[in-house]
Image (cartoon, rainbow, N blue to C red; front, side, top):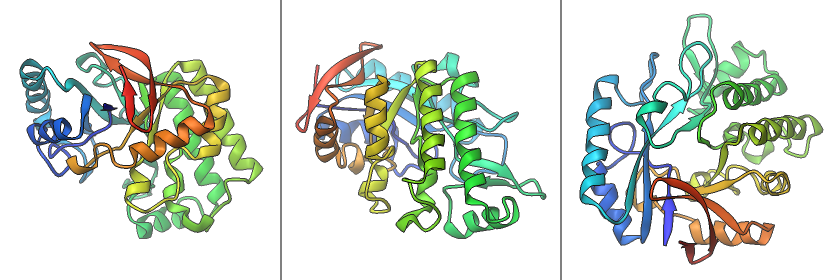
Length: 282
């Protein structure tokens, strides 16, 4: 049995409907499933849900809850943190849990929001014009925003906490062994630990073949284990075929690091569950 709390639907940039995802979850032995389409945000965003669709999205999830005994269905949104614009607290009261993520780091002079995990060309535009090719400043600001989010607007789950590395393939901008980078990560983990948030172990970069590791990287996971920060396993699925993609392999890696439990939702409550490469044991 598996669980997954980071899934997207065609209400945002996902490729399938809520009912199609539920049907696929049944075939993949997913027993606890959370829908977390990208929340609407008040800036131009091609991959976010439209504000006018929010009520239908929540209503459709409630309908699935009423008719599905397995998998258990939960409502969520992946909510961006953009200071002064949006935070994970925005929709919290209407959801079973929240995922908080940082996708935008700053704004151009023409007021366009700079998305750090969009196209590489767009990343380079912001890197050059906003941050004057100072990658340390970019990364530092990314992690500062993550710390602000968990300290002041804490979500239930921190989404892909080291997402900034998506632009660093081949360590073309920085090395994760750089002391300044590791210091930013450690400061961020301290803030997460104090907040009580869960860190997701996200397999999307692996199955998309854009990365060789999960979000977060294995060395960060070792620090998370030592700090006693809870984790959950997710695939950030934008297609139902990817609901458990790389789960057996990553579960084995987590066990080898030393993790014995992950967080799952069971009848509406977060609980610790043992796991192995075969799945979660509820």
